[in-house]
Amino acid sequence: MKTFLSIGTGPGIGFATAERFAKEGFQVVLAARSIAKTQELAERLTKSGYKAIARKGDSSDPKSVAELVAEVQEQHGSIDVLHYNAASTRKATLSEQPRDSFNSDLAVNIGGALVAAQAVAPKMEEQKSGAILLTGGGFALAPSPDYLSISIGKAGIRALAHGLFEPFREKGIHVATVTVCTFVSPGSEEASSVAEHFWHLYSQPKDSWTAETNYAPAST
Image (cartoon, rainbow, N blue to C red; front, side, top):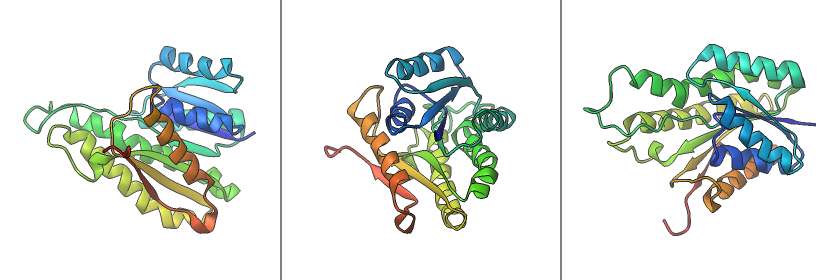
């Protein structure tokens, strides 16, 4: 059974994407800072007949991310799909942004993704297969002065996906991002649609792999 690891699982895109892969026969590992909330999400999946477990992981802490990946690999042998979904969506202009919060925001928004990719890459390279999927955002394309830290973070996610795409494709690893150009609420049609975009990226034949797909509702 293939393993899907979600880092920064929330009730919106994170849960919907994990559920989409679970429907395809993946066992899913959901990880976030709040183990109680993450356990609730895992139980929703298990009650639907899927195999899911919850783990605690702090996306802002490189050691925590690396240890999480190592633990999942030890228990399941490999991680076939990594989904990095963590984000600190602080609303703050340049003058409003607390000085001691910017680096911690970036640690979640992009730093954790870099560490997670570093951690899963060696085993994926050994297997010559795997996928690293990143939740991007429209702020990467149109930065908001009111959401500076998440705008910079999503620009970093997009750069990471495009920067790793070619060298990792040669190793059999598909790195890709869905740039989500709308607000997504839990249990919404948008959440399911973004999850479907991630599944589509994963399902692409190797000779047709793409690094990025954009999602925006037809009405926007």
